[in-house]
Amino acid sequence: MAQIGRRGLLTGGSALLALAACGNGVGGNRAAQIDARVDATRDYLFNRYPGTRDLSEKAYGVLYMPLVTEAGFGIGGAYGQGALRINGVTVDYYSATRASFGLQIGAQQYAHALFFMTDKAMSDFRRSDGWAGGADLRYATPETGASIGKDTTELDPVIPFIFGQQGLIAGATLSGVKYSRIIP
Image (tube, rainbow, N blue to C red):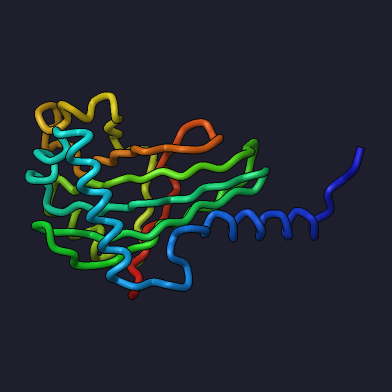
């Protein structure tokens, strides 16, 4: 049985992180391209899951991440870019990154939106020097998407909604994802 040395592991991990960045605008951080992707993602979300439109109207802001690419083979990574919108207007651009290590193999892409339901949650996010999604987030799923606007209370400060998963990694989670402001 062949053993993988540290150099092989680091090379493989670097290759996976590069793969995770594919198709996410790395090297071409143009605001117009990100905004176009966000518009398409928002329209898809509202048309496919009508309750999310009501939720966005109640939210203080929504961070749309149109495409996050994740890949892993022991060492994994994920990357995506998106925009924070307040009252439908882009106010900032963000990247989402994650590194992981453990029993994993495969790749997937997905989109997600973070609905900031309190002014404090929105302010904390915008003031932070990199905000990390944690295990305490209450998830909305596509199965509840049609009625999410009616079922959600303002007691949940941030509601993530993951949708459009494609690929071969089981599940998508935002735990450990770090969001950082970028200048496109």
